[in-house]
Length: 166
Image (spheres, one colour):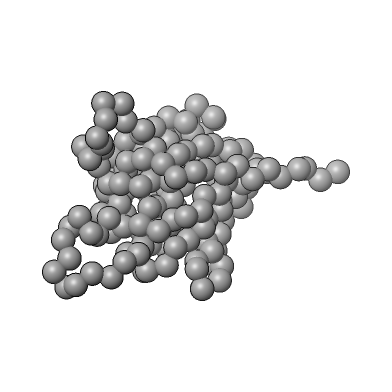
């Protein structure tokens, strides 16, 4: 009797949590970064699709915490812990942060969103003492990622480059 595996999809500027045997997926990662926080023993994982590094960029009073690196990590930790993960056991994997467009050598910081997203997520994970055990960031191609909390494998499909697992 095999278990039914459900794929939980996470949209842009969104987050969710799954328990094994289910898997969690997000697509459309260009300069966005998909960050997975998981407890491998409890087989629970959360995924956030982060668009921007800093919520101070928000143009409205109410902010979507999943959209920004500085708010998504803390919110995702809360979700994973609420779902049974143990804070001291949490680890992270991330992918994305591509430079989707080429600019002249004088490109400004504003153009380097992917790189800035990755750096902001590293800072937040470090702040909460969550080790990054694997990452696939940068480059210039979009990605789709899927995480399996049972195997802790992050499967990354990169445009024109096939699939790799970390």
